[in-house]
Image (cartoon, rainbow, N blue to C red; front, top):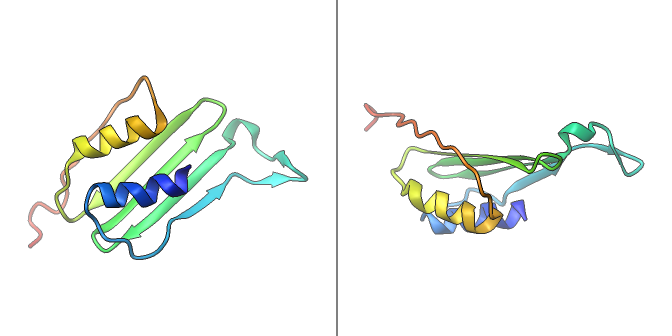
Length: 103
């Protein structure tokens, strides 16, 4: 789910992949979660324009998403795409404009 989300979000906001997404599940030992309260998935996709990260915690159904780019993008598209994909009911967002004096 996270892998496809990262792939498709890049296309949705018109950015360029540097590689495929990297997605890792929290460690298990003999099929048992080593950190059950932290069981979840982290993923990252490097972009020519910077990168996107997602982290989730399965026990609490918590997701955090960071879209960092030196290009402008439509943050509402990101929100709408994530809402459709993960069907969350509550959310908060923070937008920080960086590199204001860059090129």
